[in-house]
Length: 191
Image 1: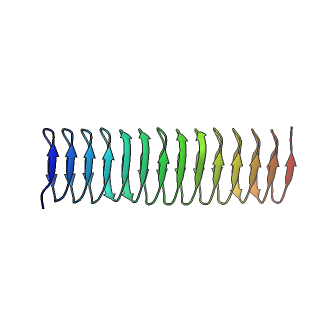
Image 2 (image 1 turned 45 degrees about the horizontal axis):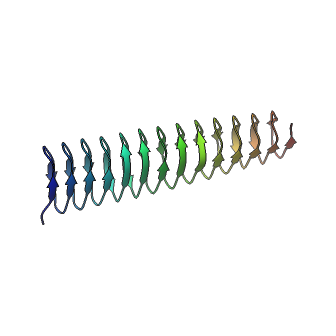
Image 3 (image 1 turned 60 degrees about the horizontal axis):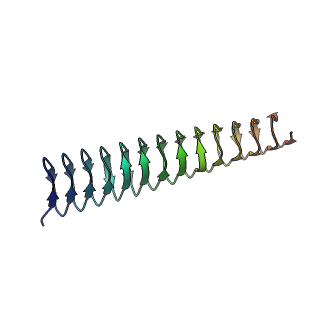
């Protein structure tokens, strides 16, 4: 089958690829690029933007300077790095390594599976099944929830609603600000 190219200095290995732009490289089938200086190695990827790189299949990028390895991922933004499968990322300068994650924000780092940052900047998650809304939060563990800013959780099944709380352990709840717990099954109410 034939490839369709509109632009200069493009290189294609495969069939049914479409390019509008210059200096792109595709190895695979059924890929679409609108932009320049983009590289794809895989099948059925769609890229709208410049200087993106994909290795995998069924990925979608709308933005610039993004890097993705994996399958079924979506990136809207710029300067993001993604390694995994079935992730959705909206924002700039984020890094995800894992599967089934959703990020909406900027400068977030997420390592693990099934996590969500619904709105935030500069959050860090290392674990699985965590949920964050806010800025500058850190979770090391699983199944925790943060709504607020500058909170730290190290453990499992903790919940924070407020700012500047620190929870270490399991099954802790902090509401308000400036609470600290080191242990299990604590309920804290701060300012």
